[in-house]
Image (cartoon, rainbow over all chains, first blue to last red; front, top):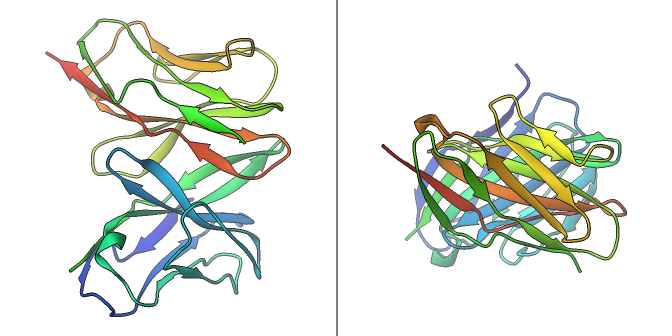
Length: 114
Length: 113
C-alpha cells in the first residue's frame, strides 16, 4: 500500500531532550515536507526537500533540523525541544502532476513538550 | 507573495442541506489549487484539485469546486451533506513557478442532525 509512515504517533517529552520523528514513504516521491498544525493557525511548513541531499526552510524552521540522506526517509529532529513546539506534526510526500505537487500525508505525530 | 484565506473557521449545517466553504487566494501568477480534507484523528487527504482546463472540478464523494480567476476564488460546494462529511477542510495553493504550497487555516464543517 502506498503510504507515508511517521513514528512515533504520540510522544511526551521534557524541555531540552533531543528527539527525532521519523518519516518514510514507499512511493519513490522526490518531494517531501514537514508541517505543524496548531489550532487557528492551520498547517505551516517547517522544512521541505526536493530530492536527496537537498533541503530548504519553510515558514517556521526555527528549532528544527532535517536530513535527506535517502529518497524514502525525511526525519525531523528537535535538538532541544521547548514547550512552544508542542504541536501535531505531519510529514508529506509529493507526486508531481503536470508541475503541481499533489501531497500524500502521514497520519500525524502528536508531540507534547513539558 | 501568495496567500490563502478561508473566510470561515467553522460552518454548521444541517444534514442533507447544501454547503459552501469559501477560499480566496492572492497571487500574481498562474496557480494550482487544492482542497484537502482531514477527518477526525486522521491525516489530510486530497479531496480535489484544479490544475488546468475545466474550471469546475469534482470529487468522488459529491463535492465540487469552481476556479474563478477574476475573483481569485476556489469555493468548495456540496448540494447535500451527510454526517460522514464532518471534518476540517483545507484550501491550498501552489504557484506554477514554485514548489511551495500554502495552506489556508482550515474550515471545520459541523453536520447537525
